[in-house]
Image (cartoon, rainbow, N blue to C red; front, side, top):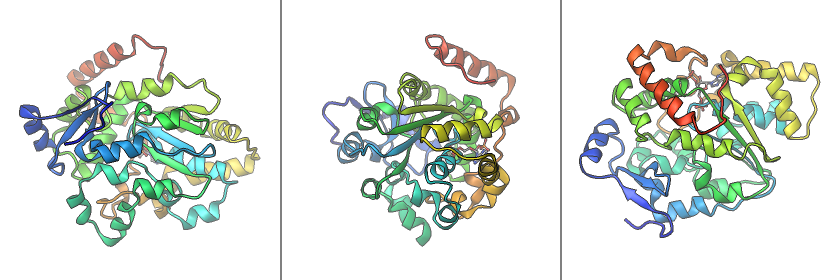
Length: 325
Ligand code: A3P
């Protein structure tokens, strides 16, 4: 394996690799820990050519990036942002899929080639949304990524717009579990997945580093840091906040129409936002599920909650990052 020379990369092997291969049967080439912070990524992401393309991605000042840890409300934030930035062009939003309007940088790298080869023709079309596809989008570009900001140095060192969305980590865990289970990406139990989460053995972990890196730059004028729970509680206020970020003003009627469009029931029925991913096998429930802020309680035992709470406290003690209740 050839890796980028100035990034420390550590292939995962031995007993850990064997254990992980049981949980992640689709990832035949295994995982790698990338860089100082040891980002846990599939082998394909960490190959030199691919990591180089990510690290050197050519940014344009009129780009808008949405970065998040998976299952944090990315899709909702993408649709909201795209509409606000594009003068509430509902006609286009109803005709072009979100992934075409707002492509996903990581997509071609997170699934192994033989998995992508089994996709339906429609899904294969989506899997061709490679880094080059994203790069060659006409301006202004809207780009989603789950890569942490320190693997996206060209984004951070630019004045393009960056929106980061974070969510209560227990809700992320439950949502991430159902998502990976439905797509057969992860075959372990919920408890095992939580251990892998806390031990930084889930994709794009370490989770806290992911969030804290974005939190650290939240005061920059080109950065907006949002919480899923706030979006759920105060959608109208957040629409206004995002509109201000883009220098747009909308009246109450327009805002109510947008809020209605973003309502999870309407979202669920909207094929432009709920068909999103290769290997989704047309299942719209994969992306748009419950949208609850307390749904995590269904899967957490008291013992697991205790361990999670300790993990949260340990990781928040050196920061002023506070999640909404
Ligand atoms: P749940 O699995 O808890 O329901 P992401 O887009 O980052 O993958 O986040 C997915 C989470 O956002 C899922 O959470 C999903 O149901 C929720 N979600 C998607 N669209 C939504 C909407 N329009 N309103 C509220 N929540 C939404």
